[in-house]
Image (cartoon, rainbow, N blue to C red; front, side, top):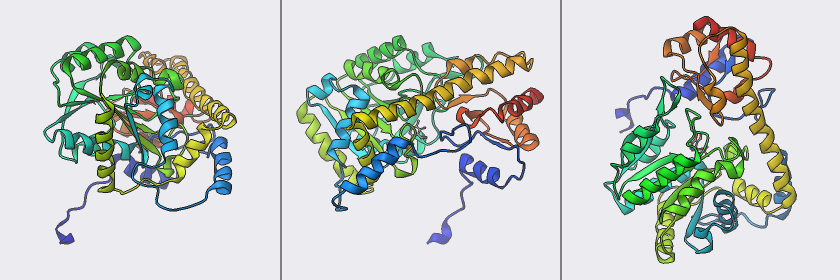
Length: 396
Ligand SMILES: Cc1ncc(COP(=O)(O)O)c(C=O)c1O
């Protein structure tokens, strides 16, 4: 039977990274894969995580099964981190949180849950969106459609067009929004725009799903969750998918959460049972280790403070690099306006060059990023930025 399978092309990002690894050019730069890197190009384990691991080794009492919902304590700290501890949905007991294998596991569980509510639902995603949103949601059989989001000509959000499309979406459909640090474009809604989206969601009755994978890497932990909190206060039902991969640096530990806010506590119990059944039929139970570390960190004042300061360092480095890149582009005499890069948030922005120019920078200068021109800002550092800007000047 397996003989009937056709070989698929490499994943564009993972394929590119394999070529990068084999490139002997000592000046090569990796701006492709979406992981945080420090000035030395490393993705180190956070000190808060190391301390939590030591504590965990000494206090863990069992490796028995954790259950489909994961650790309840992890669910509680994640709800407080995302919504704020005294959010009405928490106080009224309308939240339901399951620990998941990363943000991807959360997205898939959310999609399966939606399918159980309405197998004919359409999931509306931003144009553009993170490439993996489409298979994670769409492979369940849900339909995928796009709403306009980012105008590459003006490097800004097409908010009127976005709202005009959302005004046509009805009850029974899902609208997927990026909580902060939009991947791939870095352009986030402002608070007024979040209010408008919330008003349309309420009026039309569609179910918003906020995917938040970069909380704390844009403007700050609370600032980055502000849009999500506006929505959660405005609509009766909301899905949230969260990842601890980037902000806790726990990538390979596969740590995330799916949160379902229901209109009532009765609906919450039914939702909980359905989510557990979705998980049981999929990966059965989430891995325990990463979530245990997050729970330890967020339950300790000392470790939380340490995590905050490490996260602040990462955020400041990214925002500093955004400014430095634009300053260097101006100093190099490039006339095109790249100032949008300083207004965007998180690890990604489109550099705004054509696929041909992307390929030219790759073949002539060993600078690796995907054809869409999405760059990982954290891949830039003081040693490679001039080389990058020279290469950009040449292709422009
Ligand atoms: C927008 C977005 N959502 C979700 C995820 C999921 O991350 P993970 O499954 O690694 O936690 C990512 C990771 O790159 C992302 O960019």
